[in-house]
Image 1 (cartoon, helix red, strand yellow):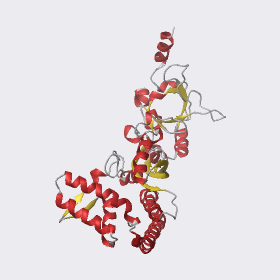
Image 2 (cartoon, rainbow, N blue to C red):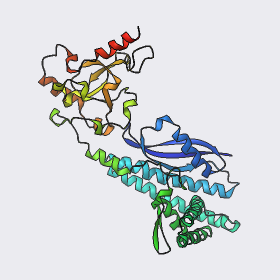
Image 3 (spheres, rainbow, N blue to C red):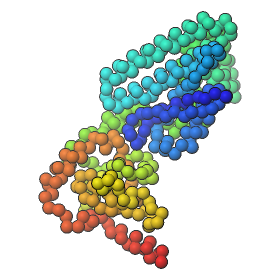
Image 4 (tube, one colour):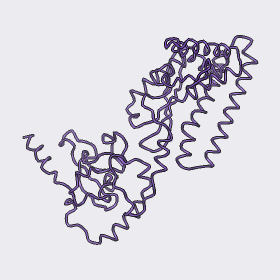
Length: 373
């Protein structure tokens, strides 16, 4: 048994960028570790607001006394680094529109490819005479044999034989076969027996090659979302935020220090305007927001103090009065200080009763108190 570090990359809906998480797994080999790590991730409640989840690689510490495992570990690290650069660093550079950052990451990719080449040459010179399998394709060879079985099950016997022949050539250190086999697990396809064969359906977390989460959106979806989020520095440009602008499922998320989107139905009709939709918990001088979380000794969904991000109004509302948390790409593009100043200049008189803008919820709380008698 050995300890493996299994790396996942993902898009964080909470923070609006790509990131990685690492799970430590004790297993017989990296193939068992790969599947075990998916179980750990699925049981992790912190992954609820992650998208575009991929298993970026497996790394471990290997002894030079076991040459095959040692070279496998070196190659596995470089593969992980390539995936990290592609899945995280390059995507974040695209979100930030950082052209210099993109160039740096391209150079880093070239360095990793160079390291892979050096590992391949050294392993060939030292290990090939002793029957070592090419470490730069060790994992691909293992999973490719499983894909041969899937092709046979589907009646694609010619393609299965072509892939088996390619694997055999790779095991004998044929450079072209090694690159073609590695490419299969990058693109999800290979040209076999005169036709392109696609394997994407086998790359889900429960598939032959458990790389991607079953629900997996493309990276450019999130990058485009940041591109589409325009800077808001005047009230006239402030949109009416709603369901399409919140983090999915964030109505169950802690609202602490976040920008929350109010359900318009909580407002009286005449106040259902953009400046009344965005709120955040209101804290006292010690940074404490009373009743931020539900209190077991209080009424269900008890009220907590919230402050309007634009008008400055402070009232007590309920968790269910909000539809969720505003996505980071929108929240970070709103100049709240400028909007507050503009609103204050337009509204020199203070409302006599700030709660007039809300539908009356007192009856709900009164009914709860009466029902407890």
